[in-house]
Length: 515
Image (cartoon, rainbow, N blue to C red; front, side, top):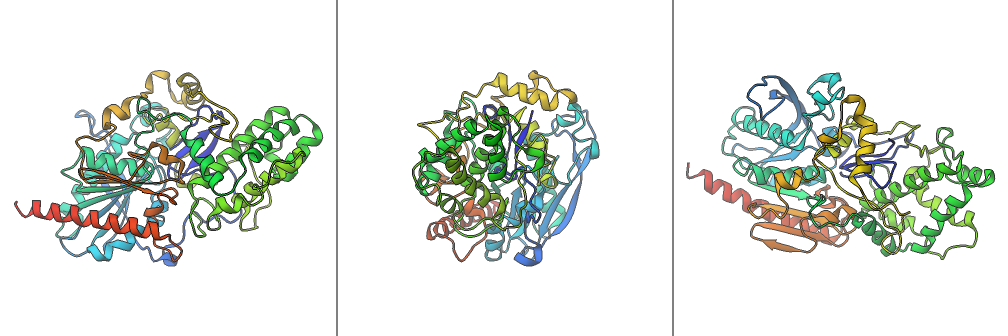
């Protein structure tokens, strides 16, 4: 098995694109740039916190015969907190918690007006929170405790302790959960399963329907990526022609040499035979999917440094019709790859083959974490159909059998077997349409391919469940910090979210006053 991409906010992709394992959200490439800024320093953006540890967390919350414990890391800031104020609690995703603290500026921006405490909790088995230390990923008997359900129980234990012990006069403090991508799913689920603990949730770009039996088509991700590029000016026919040209050029020595040169491929990932065209096409496909997710209106370095509206810039050379020259079509596509991996101009070579190169984001969390969750509970079917649905090489249909084959290549040595996968567990455990849930905002942006699995695809309200759709929104854009180049649309969305939070806090305080 080859891992193409480790997603910071969600997702790792296996090289066989028919069996893509994705998770926050947010594709991270296998390329290692010389100067990589995963997140700004606390001093630069004003986000300051204290790293602390919550001791004695149960390894297994659902067993009364297992007394083992571990410690969970969290980041806390009480600078805006006043006794009795709310607790803004981020439900950590699949990576080191600092990355999420740095990229969820919305919480930091609004905390002062609410006199709120800020807490970012790290997900078990990610970052420094390793329940079994260096042996956490060693074998199935340890990995079996890596699940969303166990993580939610961790967060509940932490919240109760924060209110009772760590934070002054917080026993009646309302708790508002925040999360983006997988973290957004966790925020929605913790409000749904533990409404007596969490009073409301902002679930940004949470693909809560991206599971079997939830009426999501397997190729919707690719369809939305294609739509994002097309509306930004790209000529779909030119992109398809470029992918076809890669296949043709890989058939000759001269053609392979050209591919190696035009994409500036590292010696570790040279195109050496016809079959190598596949990993290059997969690599380019994942690059385009990543760019669509982070198509923000201003320069940002979330995943990689990029200019504002990067998809629009990537489409500049791809506006024209396909050339009769295969090399010309590939050359046009190479500009998009160069923009993503070398916008700063400091990159010398690109490593496109994940079997031969170490990914640059390993420090964010163990790269096996999300694949394990994908191979057990978080089975999120996805594939590419090709034209007319999308401009990617055809990989559909997604099949559990082929998916299990990839899972086995990764985890068989650790004791994995097909009986461990539960494709329907998430929907059975958490539900799909949330008929009994309340006080949740589901926000999604139409530029973000993960919006295809969102709770609703239109602006709507069902009781106190709210769906907010940003026409020009990328992956959890609304959760990012305020910026001078923010769209008017996202400013209004954040105002709406603030009003929802105010209402939830008011409800909670009225309830607490009765006791």
